Image 1: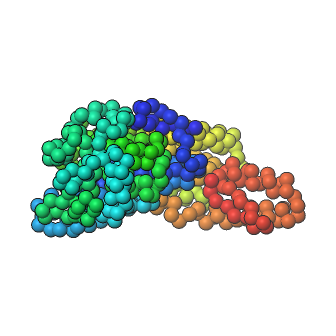
Image 2: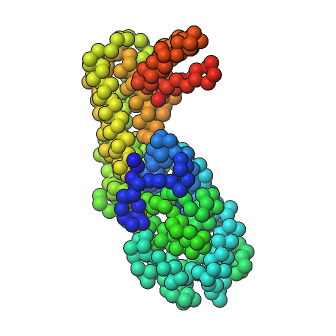
Image 3: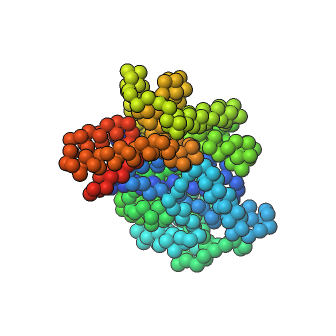
Length: 471
């Protein structure tokens, strides 16, 4: 039974989707004013692992990750470089999407702020109509924090705290801690027409409007880095539940731990940013992904050259083990009989599989889960390859492929599919079973299907035809 740590309430909770079998995830993506760095990747990989595991245990997952392509930082960067804000956004959006591709991260939908201005305006209008927002003389619109009694429950911080980006508007707010939903246009800045005059969206409103548009009034998981809990996610929650009249708007809030460098947060102000572009010039993307994928998503992770070198060693060992199993199956030089040692190995691999799932069910504890992957790798070299037996090799190969559905770093090793001699052998067994079914010997046919499942091969009957796949 999967349990997750919900930031709202700060406790482990049994994971039960709003709609059984379907999981909706919204993750805060980048503000595209600079190159994607390892700190960003830490969050994106973590939620890709979460998504992959949810799919592995049978959920239909829809993952939305926004792109903020209009913001104060983008406008400032454009002015510094003497280019248009659109050029800045396009340049760094391409860098972000390229980074995701290299890291083997697949997002189902990437909505962009500038393509959803009308939805954002409607969301703000709803808040004004319901008395949760007010229009200032300048044409800016603010959320009235005092109108939402649950403010501060997500972050545990007081509503009266200020945050830097809103200080310039303090004079026209009812309360200094109210936040901007719509910002009146300033000379030289991009703007869109609205019922309150020309302007552009505030930071927080975009995520409420886009997540609701694509995931509905209530959805399962809202994620992002822990630095977004306040004010971003606190404000999102307040304005969304106020506009929609639904509590909870989000059922589970999940947040990743920070990436540090020698104990300090990776940030521009400290000058310790490592871009993915730079990281990929030194290490293969699979190695960067492996390093990030095997750290618990809520843990603080410290970057170091040694950490990446260790990830490289781990990656090379995983690839070597996978290739060793493929070679053993390809050569066909293995026993078809199952010895006591073979039975012991099959039992051990069953324990490793259970350990993997139990660990992932404990709030996606990848650190513990992947100790099972590395133990399987050790078994390949120390025992399985020493006295190869067909059933054992096949089980190890299929289990490694199963683990990789979450890990996502061995895709190239499995790209060619099962080795040919193995594939031919399975096809032969399938043909024998088809003949048994035609002669109505269902007892023996069912026994073959059961035994094949134990070896990691699932058989599916559709009428008189049978197909198969690795379990």
